[in-house]
Figure 1 (tube, rainbow, N blue to C red):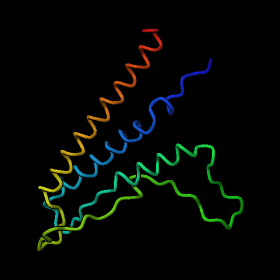
Figure 2 (figure 1 turned 60 degrees about the vertical axis):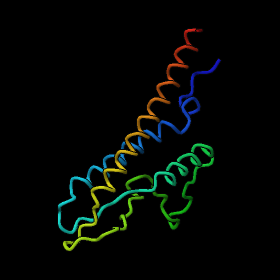
Figure 3 (figure 1 turned 45 degrees about the horizontal axis):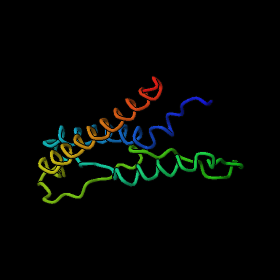
Figure 4 (figure 1 turned 30 degrees about the vertical axis):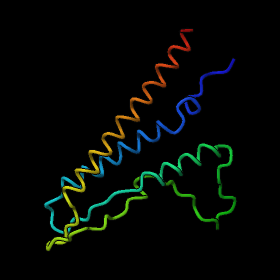
Length: 135
């Protein structure tokens, strides 16, 4: 009988929770700098990063390595490397691209999605605990 593999048991949901947390930080930073002249609002495409993480998990045994010093380095991707500037709907005179209403709406949506992912993971852990107990 083998050990429990959390990667298989939880799937992509633990990565989704971490990405949602990182996105909340980015959106909060945008909101905090809403009045900073010249500040550019940033965000990342959650779906594309999560899809990339899912493809990494599905091909876990097929990792890329460099075999020659002339090969390009394999960079780690993630939310920090995927940050993009948000296109302003109404640019301000001081160059700030933060739209507080858009950022608040995105923050609220991300918060709801974070809670949903957390509840899903909580259910998974309860199910594993019940299976271990034999219930």
